[in-house]
Amino acid sequence: MSLLQNKTGIVMGVANSRSIATGISNDLHAQGARLGFSYLPDPTGKMKQRVEKAISHLHSDFIEPCDVNKDEDIATFFAKVKETYGKIDFLIHSIAYAPLEDIRCSTKDASRKGFLTAMESSAYSFIATCRAAAPLMKDGGSCLTLSYYGGEKVIAGYNLMGVAKAALEASMRYLAYDLGPQSIR
Image 1 (cartoon, one colour):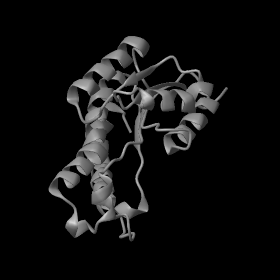
Image 2 (tube, rainbow, N blue to C red):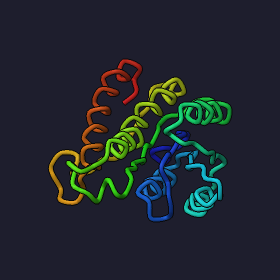
Image 3 (cartoon, rainbow, N blue to C red):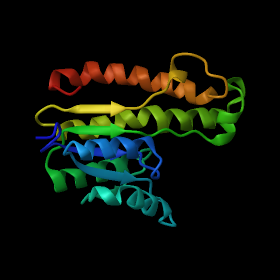
């Protein structure tokens, strides 16, 4: 029996076949997990096509749009997750974004708007998706997000994303404190 047989999880953040989230999904599937996916909605439909192409070999029966910077999208997405699966065992959050011009400049020159976008997309989205996923983890579960060494130490060129990853790591610790009593790691 595989490690994740009879376990169901949601993966958010697959962008293409080279995404870290795709690699994680491949390993989860190989261990027997049933997976559902989100994609960032766009008017052209290209993001959905990229995600479908990246995960087609995983034979998922769930791929739905979700802009994690919109509370109504998160609520709609997780309502569909509940309708489809009833409960889930884990959430994978592999989402980060900042405007390119705010990543390329020095941290001191990042715009307020770029800073807020980076924090909302990269850190707050983990809080918001965990809040929505937790009620579906009726038997406990796990929430996983991805960071980088640049959230702990200065990495030249990582700039604003390092600040956002530090906030994400702090959010993860506080979420662990909040969700631990519900047996959610």
